Length: 220
Ligand SMILES: C[S@@+](CC[C@H](N)C(=O)[O-])C[C@H]1O[C@@H](n2cnc3c(N)ncnc32)[C@H](O)[C@@H]1O
Image 1 (cartoon, rainbow, N blue to C red):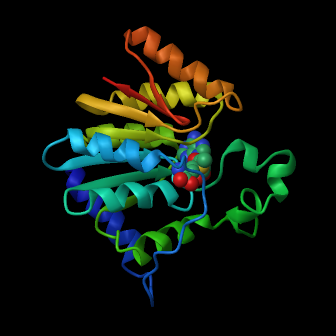
Image 2 (cartoon, helix red, strand yellow; image 1 turned 45 degrees about the horizontal axis):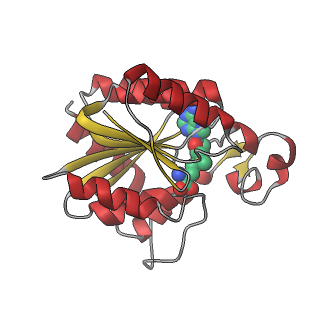
């Protein structure tokens, strides 16, 4: 199966039986730097032709919606997420935080938030350009490689612990087209693991990290 067929398969499976009675443009809850749209505008502006993008860590779809709005008519977005939450959603105050542990919407102990993501994307008309891929980031990278997927840019915003970030950066950098870029959230002192992983990878490659707000970018 080609990557395109796989993308369409994920879309059909996720959206076909979802009844959406009204469209919505209401803000989606989540975490996204306010300058994120400008960073994506710039990347899209520097690319010609059809754009293949990937997001690792989608949650309810706030950043996915921001990317999809800008890709409409000229690209598509693969969204990788376990939809099981990040470690801090399951520890300390995260467990009882309305926007984290509680927002997972567990049924018999198992998170159901995936279905809110799907509804959010369909309500915004993204059902043919945003493919939800519910798997761990590392396993998904293997699958995407097997389908021959390559991306113009990849946004990394899954687990923010150092080991996870560096593993995601290394695995997804291999899926970039030549001249493509990695982008990520939370390059800030609250998330030292993000800074350490991003700097380490950039140093290894001898390339610069561009930071805008808390959004980091590495061009390959
Ligand atoms: C910070 S949230 C993403 C926020 C989102 N980009 C937004 O705009 O609101 C992190 C997401 O990464 C997912 N995640 C964390 N670790 C993961 C992993 N190892 N594999 C796949 N998804 C993961 C969580 O389920 C969660 O939905």
